[in-house]
Image 1 (cartoon, helix red, strand yellow):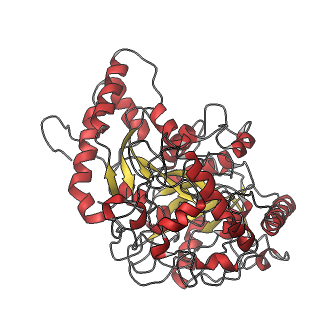
Image 2: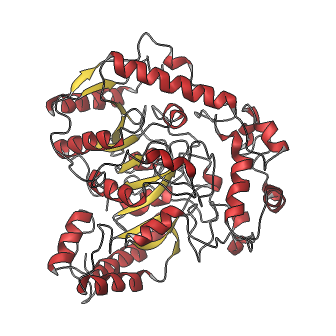
Image 3: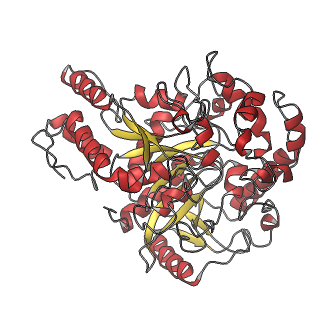
Length: 512
């Protein structure tokens, strides 16, 4: 695209981070010109797709500073000068974290949650030199993995198929990436919120092992399941973004477990087109879940299996057959297709989040939060989070929201999942699993139907890594994707496998 004399011709639909950095290095592109092109794209299309709800007015200044530092010979990282977006729920100084809710935004009559400091992931993106263009749309309290229809900012559209659900809750980030406003963006998953929007819009999404990336300073759904991660157009770009945000911080003690699990040189180092050769890959079947693939999904999966085999993988049919793995998932009453266990700590998690906002925060305690939002109580029976009352330990947490909950049933379930995964991977000598990300085609944008995925509760309760990668399209034009899964801390391995599959097939087509 070209917008004016200061904006050179840039193919925003195919440009990668590595290509951009090479162009910065040889002088054929500047951070400012790329940022100008990205802003022009956003200005032209955001009114249609409604991906970005707050634009950062300092983006060009940041880009110019990166250009100045590059010209001065400073050593810059791979994210330097790269336009990105950040999910609304991630705290960033100067912008409210609204969680998509009118009651948490002054512009719609609510109260602003203004952080005194950036979330660690936002601070790391800035330190890496990324040019943040804006914050992206989400549904109220990130409650659904399907859409953002109830956001105060209005619905976000799916850029690939506008009449289909965009995926949630990171709908805005996925649409911004798919519409080429940016090269990558931050999303967050508790129950499909990275994998669903990435797959819905033909993109790559990485949900790393729990503890790989800090979640402090992010409006929570579950401190036990929440995970920030990248959505991008290519596996390499997603891996580069993950490199920028992964690792230990004292702000989130569980990230100490990541030490020793981040590869030398990062997740983007040593990616190989031969990454599937000799790898033993487990396939979807009733041993994992009894849910049956739709006929068209099954046909697309058969093609994908042939592509995996052609890339050198050894395929293992339904490795969970003969185990009781498929008996442990429970759809929580009051939800369409979701195992919500682990979310019962939400009152405590919100209490911790509000405390981090600082002494000048408009809301400081769980009681403040409840009072400020009582006009639309999301925890009432039949409301969006009313199902939490069905979960063990929720009543106890409500009684004492400032007390860290024990959650013995959740931890026992997590232990069961991890034990079964270890047993099955050992028995079949597996390197990974590769499933269709969804059981069937995307639902309509306003259909009221939920995205039916092949793994959310299992993936997020166990806390194992997953990466989605484009694997073709349905006859309707809706994307079809695979999700690669592995045991804890095998993130680098499945990123490499997804890269090998991507490079062998190159299924993704630019959406605009």
